[in-house]
Image (cartoon, rainbow, N blue to C red; front, side, top):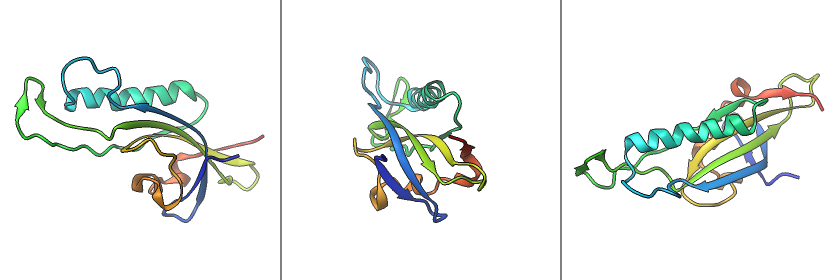
Length: 139
């Protein structure tokens, strides 16, 4: 059973089969969101995906970054990532017709805790280059 379907810009249909979400800034006890903190959060999300799914390829969608306050504090300007960090496992038909399917783990940030599906899915997810990133598998 899939949690959602997305049609990529290439026309390929992919299925979301597993989704993990967490608050981007959950547990942040001091300081404020800035480039240094956000770079760590982005790297951490990619490492989490690689650790959770070591036998599958992982793709990190570069997050959008907003700068709501032009004044710089001790750590530089305020820089904000979308509020939800996501790791999703996507499947599709095989790239090689002799295989059973293809799979890709995707890490991304989005503004709300919603299951990405259809046209409502984050625009960056629609642009995934499946043929270059996914890996075929046999059942």
